[in-house]
Image (cartoon, rainbow, N blue to C red; front, side, top):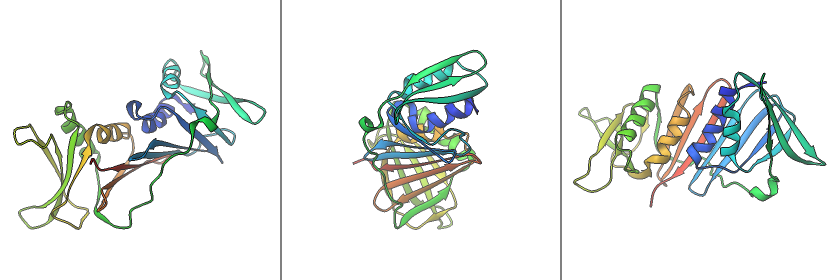
Length: 241
């Protein structure tokens, strides 16, 4: 059994508002692991205590799966159907509905790109729930602009601080700067551009997580980690060129 809310939460963390539609679900020892993304933007989502047989499932259309789950309520019972060694259907049932989702052959989904942890990071910091909420609000206020800079500077006391600057690079544009204190910041002159839409989608999908950490390497790779008691999600995002 799994609650509808928890299943939707897992999906939202890799689906990212439509960025990753085709994925493989890997279940082993009651742990669900999902890799998703492409070069320059990848993620891994792990759900513990997912009580289902060991399997590798091809989800060809997450959007359709989401729509099926949306009509259910409460706790869900998930079961699998296979033909020979290939899983062909996922059955999802609540007290009223019995839904069938057709699975794809995992071979047609290909392999996932992945990144290793950077050897060195110029920024390492934890984001509080308040930080996450404020960053999402800043992006929403400039929703039509997909540019964001992560920069470092010094405050009045000479301490290194991290700033998130939303807005394009023209001198006449609207901008919002949000500053995060603390953490381990090695440089006071860093400025790395990222896509603010992707950044917001990641934060929004993980608002229910308890912990959030951010790392930025000198190669321009941003790493975000989120965790709670039952779920972990990890993201690598490459800088804009």
